[in-house]
Length: 415
Image 1 (cartoon, rainbow, N blue to C red):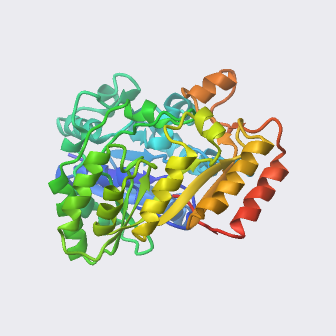
Image 2: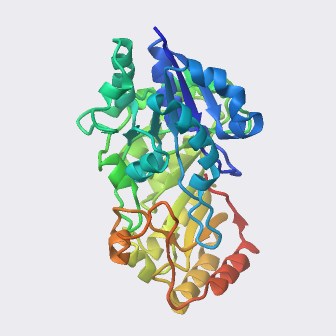
Image 3: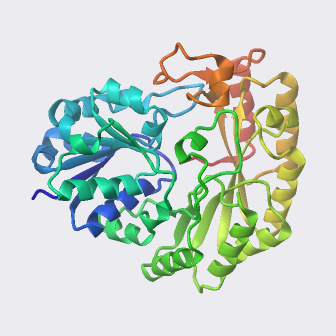
């Protein structure tokens, strides 16, 4: 029986800090664990080698699993549609192999029906795909076809299971030899879920507000193996590492017990006390990225953030004392931006002096978010990037502001 599956990482983004696609690591590991023959192809390989180079592999595969991680670059000053960039490759594959293609990935999960219809494809898995893929492979192993597994063309990830029964950190080690790239960081997650409800965020729709947590022993074992393999950089890719501050502290305490030289980065909310800052430092966390969007309390309130400028500043001071580098992410010129809020943010940036910043213009609007309904975009195509921008500030003024800040504070490219 044919037991060959190809995973394609259809992500054309070129980033300064690339990281392995964690979803493919988990799902590929599941397939290897089930004794399937696994191959992984990156979008850059498709472009460099040409689609016909892989024709024999595509012909032989029982299933082609395509991950669409990003729909576009989310940058309002110069929007780039990744869907347009991958269109040629997607249309080639869809024309020849639609019966064995399954779509997935974070970007796909935002607009599953639209993307399937755009490329005339039939099957997709929305959300964390570990359980669904595991069941799909078992179904195929029993001699069944994809068509009968997908009684509906979209399989929604189950909310009644512990996803970490399927997406085990140990699976990463099974897949890394297939995609080894010394320029990329290795990422891992500690939990699913976030305690925020930002007006523009799609993640609550994808994760369905579940809040599964990994066993801390599993996390420590993963880090120990990474150390044995000579890996010296890791990234915690949780939406917010400290969304449960007690759990974050416990993780840091246990990681600190391991003798290692691994440097770790994470995404953090300003919910930081002195104990957490000290524990993070002892655990080897050297960088924290805080998605604050603004340093104006008016903007923070309208973005539905659960923190204010004061708490951001206090977190920055506490982490700075522990020599943890801080990067702030900003959305400049959003729907809520005014001259006053921009000046307030500017003054506070120089008060806080983060080590690095990242800035984008405008808010990319995605469906099923509070902002989407506020903007009344139901009649618009969701595949085309639409942005919520200030009604009183010009794009030029916002870009000038961004350029000015970047002259004083280093920019950190986001993943």
